[in-house]
Length: 496
Image 1 (tube, rainbow, N blue to C red):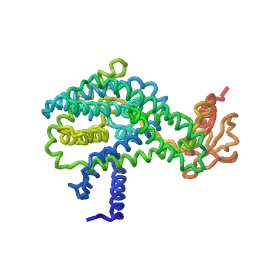
Image 2: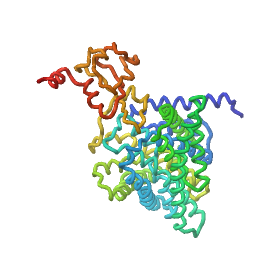
Image 3: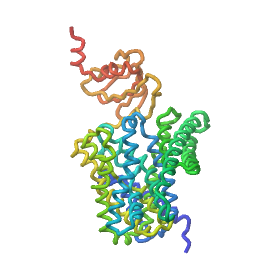
């Protein structure tokens, strides 16, 4: 019986609504969003209360590729190069060599546990060899998972850049399995081509997108997000057509745009953050619908063994060996080893053997899905606790209220300062005109309780007010002191 289009729309909207509401409580419960979305998809599937029939690996694969492209672009767009620069080379090493080491270790163990051929075991290892960008971004950007130093940008950069290596290994091993007698050496030029073409085209397309955004002068601001949506797909499609890796291309292009001066940048970042969440929900729901929970029962024991081998042996071995050339403290290496979240990428890659008709493909898919569930439960819920145990948890920071709406050209000496006036500050009770701000310092926005406005000279400064000031680099400290110093401090500073 045909289902009315209105009923389909209603069902889709309910799935989205349930996922969004469930995600609201995920941080409070200490459960990552990906697990919530997957469970909602499984419940909506043919063996759940929803009863939606879906057994189309090829469709799920297409959905996953499109969604992952937008997620990686948004991740690169919101990444600051000055945070990535200090950890660039160890991040690149871990996203390439580390992925290969993980695949080799896990593949050997999977062959023993499941009785697979070495090549098929290596295929399973390749499928789950990379950490998941969507999962890592969502977990590390929660307030309760703040990390010290460069750990967050390091882990985010690794997760955003290691997917291409996992895709390459998966497709390469499938080709070897389906082409008896083919040599592993044939993968070397393919790898170089994919990485080089992907990186160069990603950089070139990023520069082209910046040029278009700044020079087109579109009539409506709302068209700029549409432009970037189209360019992401063009970047992926053009790169893949020319033999490069589309995933690394969209990530690099996002990184280039995010670290360039473009019009409406803040609104574009917010837009693509929303698109990334939408893509996460669509991707995880589709992958949850694809799995049949009854098929997971036979792989529970081997799945647990392989999952914990990945968590406790394969990932740590890969991290510690790969990072040997860099003097990273032991506790930081331990945390990097632990933050090995697996998510949608392994499940998407597990559809590749299904679509290609590789022997044991269904078992590989079910084992991979089970590994992702275990990783989400163990890794996703324990990262803040492990970070505290290792002494790497950073104190919570108050979210900026005003400066996130503005951006200063990094090529100028100007700087934005956001200050909240403490009760004992000497500025409390003074009018703006009486503060004696130096020339080159200007209060451009002020918030009193819930009211935001541009202050005048007669505006009185009160405790709890939040000020956004534009000044120059050389005046930052003196302007900050003018507002934050206490009455006693001021008297002491002016005492003979």
